[in-house]
Image (cartoon, rainbow, N blue to C red; front, side, top):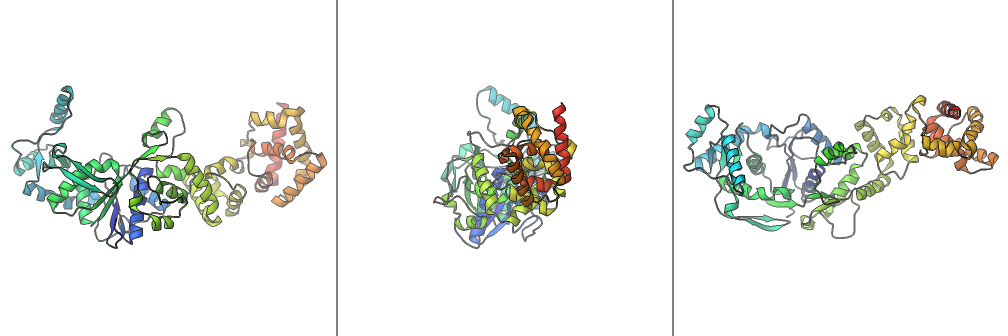
Length: 500
């Protein structure tokens, strides 16, 4: 695609929920094209399908885009000279162009009822053939269509396909031609008066001066219809690039239904939407870096990119034709690397966002505590691992329940050696005033020396007592963050288990 300041691209989501990760890849590629060319990235909300509209979805989509760092030049909240940027507010514009097509004879009112169409489909199915809409003969007049609407009938408007083959010139797939007999007349205005996706999309792309359209390959078969509409309306055809589909690692399509199926099986649902990855504790830098490589290659061995480096390196010619595979283990690896790569301040900012999204009790922690958690848990894969490791910090003492496996393996074995160690340590910890990391390191070093044993034999019983598990941040840090009072209280409660 030509690098020119005239480049205008768009992302046009439907407000049906959070942004799908495949949609995030689409918006990223559009954003990168605009940024590299010094062009304009437009955000448009396609909200004409009122049956699928989900309240609050627009806010969710905008939040997802902001989290990813993909800002828009024109669109909701940003404004622009080609608004409004909500299709539901552009009905008068669509109706003007609809009238143009009706009067030119390129579109017509179709008077069949939904029941009649359903019967025709059933007949075709019974006869073992694919249903294809047959243009009525004679075609209803405009007056007949308007009269039917006034009578309360759900009359639609169909576009009259020219009956000739149409070739899509695609920047990724090359030339794709569909024969005229494969392209039936299609609905451009529904019975409720709202335009269909096909019609509104074509009108808006033209009036918003969109020069390049990057979208998923699932839209490829729609593009000949859009080209026919553009020709009938006297619009220019933008340059198209249809992106490869994203599949799961097993080859199945990555769908929101994956979550529904997992929940039905009683399993943890996989991350599918952008918000899922945010709530699971991924860094947006890692997600953007990872999805950029789903179907695109820089042409060398590089895999690590900031968003600025992506904008500099991106080229549509490097997008492949083959479907992409979403490797979750690779994403985890990316996230682990990015958690080390970003600055401490940026990591803290991302951690705070994670805590807010999940409404975690850790939101009440002072910033110094959060910084300590991040510093002593380096090497984590996602923020959710930090929660699992440090939940003992916000739980009340009475909420700490020692896992039976941990009690048996650490406290009971070797004739209760773990309990004995806690009994030895308790008075010393009660007398200890300084619970800093350095003081705890000295304290445990002295205990090991006095007991002539390894650190694990001293630290593990304490870890089980204060966390209930055998996993936590380093024991010195754990005690420093927990403090004297809670440490002593939990050890006392743990020692009571000997009597059970």
